[in-house]
Image (cartoon, rainbow, N blue to C red; front, side):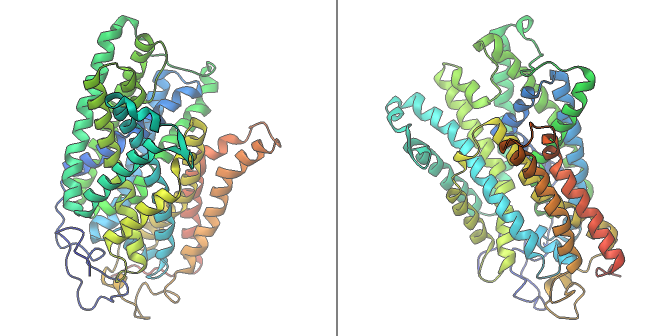
Length: 496
């Protein structure tokens, strides 16, 4: 059996069925994370290259800077509310997401959301590793100009230098992950604040070069919109922010389980989401605004901004910082979660570490650099991923808060006894499965069909806005379907 994922796990009780249990999935013996640890977790999630690019892409929608700022904050408040909802069941029981789902989907049915979530995390892991590798390429080109010859497309759309940088980051992330959760916590506690310092320095430098009087906060790149016209666009921007964080939201139970109390988790969420995100948003707007007078064009990608500063030290510091930032979000959002998910499928054969390495290898096979290279792809990808994640989120919330009334039997999550509370029907809760289908099909259709119709020339895009709300459609339908099915034919019985 593998070593435990963290020193605060415990050896499973003898009564726990080995087909459902290993040291990584068992309830925690100690929960030690403070509010700061949760705060640092969100700092790493927010301050990634993907976060800056996504925030910057909102300017292309035709919104004024204040509207972009409002959309960012409104979206993140929604994220905070949902994160608190998903945090509680795992914090109270001390088990990760795939295990808590056994109380909703059944002890075997929980593998359905686990595999779906794990597959999504593989895609994101590849994307974030690719984005971080672009910062590393800049460092190579600046300090070793001869490597420019290796930076031409070579195989499957990526250059030799691109593969080298991707491999360096792949190995670095695997090394941090392999050391376990305590090592990851220490890395995240340090990485989040480090990125803050560099972003503040970058903003101060650009503003000093431009002169505050030359900075305009009106960064709208699209056609200027009137107030009435801007409202649906702002709503779409809010939905985009929620979709971007939909993965970390669904995954958050994997981290809230370590919280010393639910109150500590909520405080960490408040500091790490609205408070932290407000400062992040202001920095994003100011930094992007300063690129116009300094470089003569709007640059919303921080990697490209650092690249344009013709100072070796700035390129080295900025490049390494964004590499660290992206590695941070990649590990916490896309490495740990599939590790639990795949381990849940076969606990005795797939350890937490093995599950994570399955995700890491799968990320290379997907060649993420081929489908995440332009703003349209960003928006489309977020919509599709949100469509898959939304139903799972809504079903979990309905199952825990409404159907189980927040009363769970932790020991029953680890037994294959057919008389067990969460055995349901052959280990599966048919209500949860049908709710997934009922919510997943419309949500995926909302994300895919409008774009498909536009590509086929059937429509000019009048219905394209639906894709922005695929996460909300899936989440809402999943919640309603689960409650309705459980009321018609109750399967989840609240514990005493």
